[in-house]
Length: 321
Image 1 (tube, rainbow, N blue to C red):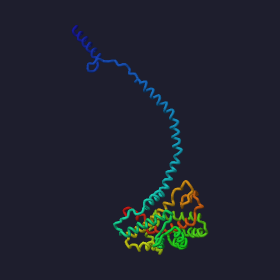
Image 2 (cartoon, rainbow, N blue to C red; image 1 turned 45 degrees about the vertical axis):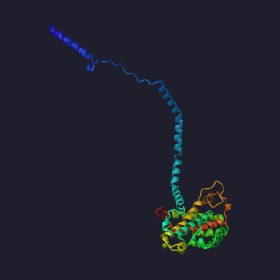
Image 3 (cartoon, helix red, strand yellow; image 1 turned 180 degrees about the vertical axis):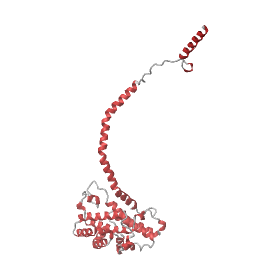
Image 4 (cartoon, rainbow, N blue to C red; image 1 turned 90 degrees about the vertical axis):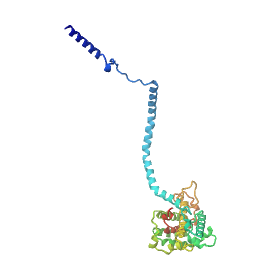
């Protein structure tokens, strides 16, 4: 009996020892409740400064947001303006590119003598472009073998102006401008030169834009066959019967039209302008007293020279063409 009692006491003692030990025989450790981590003083100070800075900047940030919101209509309007003006911008860039003379010409396909004639013609046209004269094959033919001066050009265009207008009126590309051309001619004859600039520039602007978007096409020549259109080609044929060489001659005269467009549709100067400038004249900041007979004759000549657009297309100026 005593032995049994002793055994029980020994088992209780072992159980007590087991309870006082953790897993793996490690003594149980009583861990006190963990406290919150302490933030270092310098970090507290930095957070405090950051919060104070945000409080000071918050009104500015809100003001910027309000300004951005208030500007949104203007931003949207500017985006719409860019969308509207993009075709005009693209057209101007195109003319700047294709008006450069003697580029994209395959000189291997052109006879040396013809090549020299093309270069000579380009230089002659450019020399008169400095005074905003845009010459065509008719004028070069009329003054063949003699020196062309500004006075000769004024006399020639003035004396042939009725014929000029008659020729333009026969052209489909001037069909919507017939009455405007007639009245402008009458205004010229009456000495109302200032009034002539508005109508002549508007007609030219329409022509150049129509050509750019493809409304003036080569194939229309056969449909609206006119002797004056055919004459554009006949002025070239005496030089060469080669189609490639004829095409380069035609491009030379068309490029002169494009360059005059560039030179007369420029930005409005800071000072009153005395040269032909569509923008300064149309927008009221021009020395209108400087506009004279010669200026109007230059514009009539420009319209006549624009007839060349009937026989060239944008594709003729492509690099791969």
